[in-house]
Image 1 (cartoon, each protein chain N blue to C red):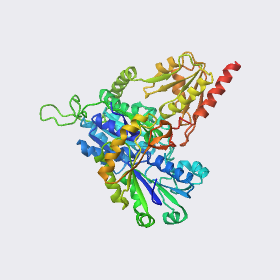
Image 2: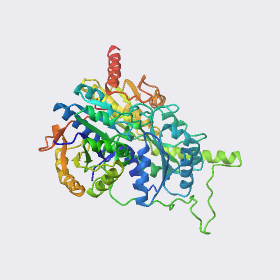
Image 3: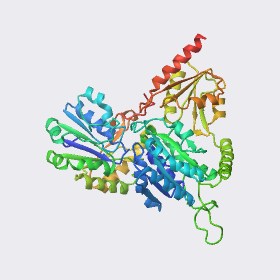
Image 4: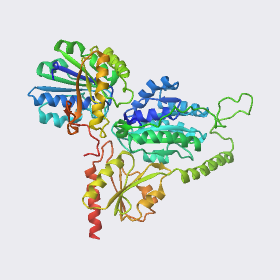
Length: 215
Length: 357
């Protein structure tokens, strides 16, 4: 997978961005890279990248998160220096909050990101309500581009129905993802599928964000 | 039917629109802000009204006005915001008006925290405002149920001319699950079938008055008594509960909302160890499903109540089983989510106690 040094993961909230960002960070770390993952979610109160601190610690991935993430202080204070993080690492994954509301946080870093080289991935999920058509995705993608000051460079297909996802659901989503990519004028970088589904040609991912009752 | 992956808060909002909710008045607060955000985007597209009020107090009073006109309307908030709404809820109940209110609970008391909680049970079932009144309380446990019970809440609120509350928690509001919606057009909501509505008399009938003030004590008493007669009908028609593996269970766990799903995992784990455990889950918290709880505990020897609170449902469970069995409690509070393994440990302890008897 040839991606630039900075990889920003954007899309509709709930489409699977965080899980994609976590998997990519671990993927690059396993390949021997010095990786940092940035939790840039200023929208979501829980189910976020900062939940996986232990996992990142054991994989040697540095985690940068808003100062008060996972506390009761509902203030999205971003106190890290992305330029410094890019200088210190081979790869910086940025998990951006959902929609254009979340991508606002990316805007302040756009010059720095462009100067270091940045791929902005847009995650699609065929089964996600209100982003089930290429037109709906294109509208949201343009909103994200407008507020972030960055252009999307690729589509990631993360089509899933949570715990109910089957291999067939994933396979049936590929033409949709290709249509989204064509509409956006960028390539489909990969289709993600939970490893045990055994979807041929898919980028195998682990599902880290699990319900609390699956302890 | 098409399955949609949705966040709990979105499912609540979309289901309300499909149930004919034409006006939404809100004010943001974590962990339910997605409801307002969703309504802001969707309502204008379906010919409805989204209005961000200047406060929770304003929002509930906008609901009061809108409900008076017979239009289906809704507001939502989270715990501290619901406390602010309580005066308005009392006025709405005192005026015998239907509406839907959503509480996506977070930790309290006071400003508390933003993590999930179930510590507004007493407020929802006993004291959502001053005076002699009750509200219907539905406690969904899945994202699909959040959609389904919003529809039901609107229907029952209209039928019994009373506010209906969806009591969810941050965990349900924020989680993603597949949802299906019944096909069909969005219901049109108007004042037809609501002869009490202040929707314009066109000089064809005497004008309607919506009010909770009565000049004579006897008059106020009359209205309160009439309202409570209606509540008897609600108690006969509305209670709902689900039981799971309870029929032959020695130990029945009682839990509602998201905690019921944690408890179900613990019950499954107990069963796999050969412990006869079961689950009973109240779906309506008012009226409380006494008969269903009593039936689910008919063969039980112990009852374990599990909540994300200090045990606010315990007394209702004791009353439902007529204090026939020992009832113990395990809960986490302040935004801490109990682990299935913690609930299992409680079941195992009760099982050992039973074996020792």
